Amino acid sequence: MVGGDKSLTGAMRSAMKNRETEAAWSYHNGTKHSYQSIRTNAHSLDWENQPIPFKIYSSLDPIPLPRQLSSSKTPALAAIAAVTAPGEESDMPTSQTLAEILFLSAGVTKRRSYPGGEMLFRAAACTGALYHIDLYLACGDLADLAAGVYHFSPHDFALRRLRSGDHRGALVHASGEEPSIVSAPAILICASTYWRNAWKYQARAYRHCYWDNGTLLANLLAAAAARRLPAKVVLGFVDQAVGDLLGLDAKREAPLSLVALGHTMPNILASAPTMEPLTLATVPLSKREVDYPAMRAMQEASSLASEEKVVAWRGDKNKESGKREDESGKKERLIPLHPWSDAEMPQDTIAEVITRRGSTRQFAREPIAFAQLSTMLDRAARGIPTDFLNPGQSLNDLYLIVHAVDDLPAGAYYFRRDQRALELLKEGDFRRDAGYLGLGQEIPADCSVNVYFLADLHPPLARLGNRGYRAAQLEASIMGGKLYLAAYAQRLGASGLTFFDDDVTEFFSPHAAGKSVMFLIALGKSVKRKGLNVV
Ligand SMILES: Cc1cc2nc3c(=O)[nH]c(=O)nc-3n(C[C@H](O)[C@H](O)[C@H](O)COP(=O)(O)O)c2cc1C
Image (cartoon, rainbow, N blue to C red; front, side, top):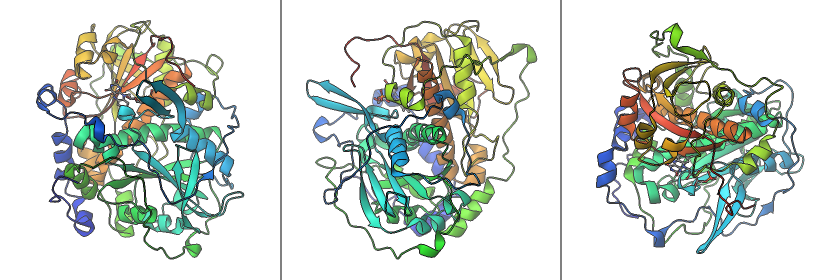
């Protein structure tokens, strides 16, 4: 490990630090891309030291998961839009259902050979194809899976048991008895190993923790909805307690989010066994690891140290949002969305859509239909079941640069979510601007539409402390992941993108003044390249 330990201040101090939001500002401002920062960054990729994209437990036997996907008939576009909250009836997943959800969230969906070896691509898009997010499962006894804490191993599509017995009680406590966790027969936990992404992206990789968790969660929520299994994303928890349950190394790894899956009569608290520390060997990721203290500092500054803090944190989301309702929209510039009707809607299932999803490498500069754009926005922005958003609440605003959409003038737009309408901010051909804003890449210049998620970070940081930064990033990237799926459901292409932070804000100002970019995605028609599609 290189890099100092100066920013590691300990869990006790970090508990108080969540309210000291200069930490989030300092991390965010310190990891912005600008034309200048990219030109002067001397970082180059050390291919000899590239980390492997899997966490492999060397001493645990695999418990193979069923590989046969049973098909759910629910159309993907319905599943993407669903906002399922835990219901009243009992919904118990089986290992078959869990296997399908794990596969559609983080499974290996494509293998591509190249002269130096083979690349394994996954169900959800991930920055740099570095796949630093792992999924863990804590469950009670299910029909065909014994109670335990498991790691999902995508490389051999198996579970590995880290702990035997029902440990959900630890998560019930860690989440401050969040109701969906209290009644969940199965809880999935998402965690990042920083180095697997920071190898390429350095300290900006902390943003990628939430970006890549968000695309994965968009898949997970849609896969669960298609199986009518209630699912809810929980961001309020005692970080150290969750890390200890999974045996995470707090200097290198971080728990990011919990997902309550299913619903049963709550009886979890009674059965929590005592927990020994885990010391399980894993295969080294690379020859050596480089530490980026800014990531740990942000993680610690946004951590919650006790159940009481979690309960208080969650209560804070109900405080006045402080979000400025922008009244400047002129009616004559509002263009209502016109999504496909149910009868016109493409019917492909979520499994079909996820297994053909990829990131578009080249866009065709051709127009898409206004109904296609409308459907993507409409389906992606209907809300997300979480513990940090009330129904109808949102931390992000959607801004668009439209290059080529039938019946819509090219230009910059603001999405008025309440009115399901686009507001034209400025008309014109902005392909060159969009190319520049996306770090000079061709993708944002050649696509049909770019969608930027911008958050005014002041209200969420005031309400939720530094953890509000995690929430804003995660909400944007879950919606971004839904846009990916809504594009592929209509046989269009999509690609996540990185960006010059302040230049994007300036482009959409004065409307966007003071807001920060959380996520960017390009949408359009891909140029089909021969010989690259592999199973
Ligand atoms: C948040 C995010 C940002 C991304 N940024 C870029 C980018 O700037 N340029 C690019 O070519 N691809 C970008 N990608 C696409 C990834 O490279 C791609 O997801 C990864 O290689 C895996 O391939 P797949 O999406 O085809 O499965 C991004 C993806 C995500 C999720």
